[in-house]
Image 1 (cartoon, rainbow, N blue to C red):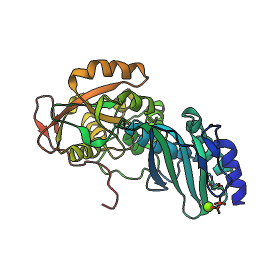
Image 2: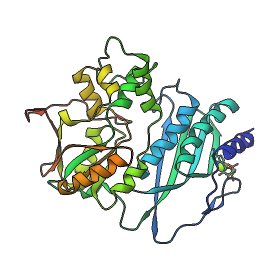
Image 3: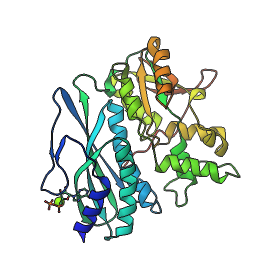
Image 4: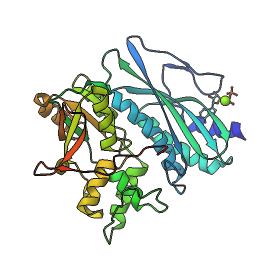
Length: 329
Ligand code: ADP
Ligand code: MG
């Protein structure tokens, strides 16, 4: 039974890579490590009812389990190569696993990532992916390099996933008091939920940022929380211009301005890259990013005083109650 499921996953997700000398099927995978490169390695777990509503489709769970891991490599400026998958399932549901594997495989193929092993056990639904990629020694994007005077940027748009979560049936939480527009069209609702369920890892953008960004993080817990990590790691602070935060047209039409701002500042799960760079290099960098298929927006600046502050159009500080998703809180 379990063997059947593993065989099904293997058929869908194994991708031919010359550096995979032995993939799924033995006691361990054998992988050829390229010389001159560091391995970039990361793990993320998705728990049903915590990281996605119980009603989420298997396809979306498979996609997202890989997407959140790819996003961590993107934030390091690494190229994805291999992954393992630890799957805990309530039952040996072949149809579910097939759908899950399709969602996982769609992203794996796009990024030429080989699934090289894993584990399959019975229990409450839980998915853990470990991802491994490559980055040349010295080229990784770390959190700690932001310097006073650097500009702060974010790719894509913010708040969509958090908006989608508030619009999904069986939403997990409404921790920010979101107010939804009286009539949200199905296409707007669908677009926001798609951003929640199928985030696009910014791998190409992470590669473009090598040698140019001074610090980088992916926005998983919310902009304020994640920018707080960049500040803490670099012993600096950040100032955000609330008006400059990039919003999608779907987000604009679904929420009033105060709610939208809370979603953009505090909502997690967007998996955009937040990075800092010398402002003098910004125009060329922004042009390159726009041509890569996902542009970026300047949203603020790094300052000496620790902490993250948000300012309105007049430059007055806005107090933001909610600063991101924290476990065990
Ligand atoms: P072992 O008992 O040696 O750990 P398993 O029966 O757990 O072996 O796994 C057999 C093979 O199938 C191994 O190569 C393992 O990496 C792979 N595997 C098991 N579960 C998964 C999964 N969910 N995804 C990918 N590979 C898996
Ligand atoms: Mg095992």
